[in-house]
Image (tube, rainbow, N blue to C red; front, side):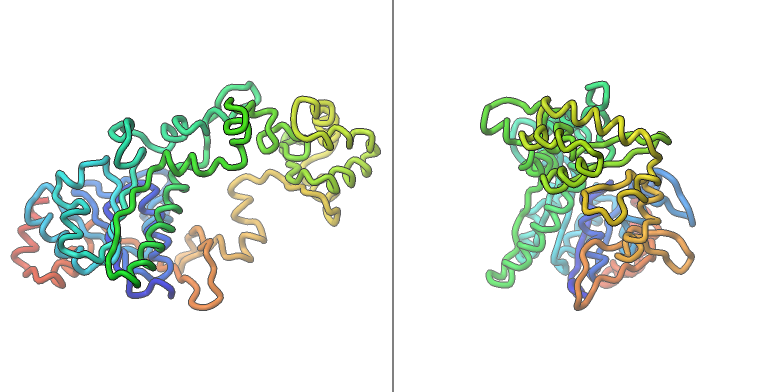
Length: 384
């Protein structure tokens, strides 16, 4: 696998950091999850559980080892620094300044291992006026303007049910780590990577910043091309209370569908681009799509070259033959489901390891490799 031989230390909790290190574990890296004493990683306790673990934990921590250390103890900090001497990547997601106070910040770690690629993930980054504000995904999306774009039918901001800031930060952390590792091959030195969830969310807005940068004003979501201002990039309710979407605004699709519906006179509204002038077209399509059930529209659109999709719930999405064909729904030896690998290589494809560690399960194994004897390991365990 592509990352075989790579050792990753991950101190992060919840989603962005664990997701980044999961991608590395799935492609062969040895990932050591450093967990705090007590309940350990919060994902162990969040959401539905099956087979003795939560689904959240299963899909962020498969194939990793668990080292439980109380980093408030000097000997535990020294053990972590010794471990860092053997590692390639170090990930943390505390508030800025915490790892420095603990004595395991970039300066301390890189002094022991100049080749380390050290990635800090935080809500607002290591500097700026917001750096010390506590925040998770929702708050960073709110600061980044994304919540203001996510409006319900009542025109009020709605909960963004996909954690955009979390996942964007995770992917950018992963990409930054890979770039730093590549550069290390030429320089022999690692680097420090500062990933902000707020930065990450802002970076995902190139298709909706037109009004912001061209005219200095916030967009009106319902008038924007990809936010509801276009009839052919919109959501429609069907007769059975389900929904379908039109997801392609190219005029060839517009002409095809409106021709099929006997309303070529409405094409001119789409030709003018998105905006309130398209409302009569949207109203017509709402009325038309309300005449059949979702599945009847699926059958009707089959074979027609028009950007269309049924709105599936998440259970349907993972049961979909496309997800099955692409290996995005996996089953382990016990028949339990897992999210598959989105990065697919022709050579050396990733192979997820479905083992899940207990808190501190690998303490003795890992600490022995660092030169600690059983008495020292027992002493650290008692101090947790």
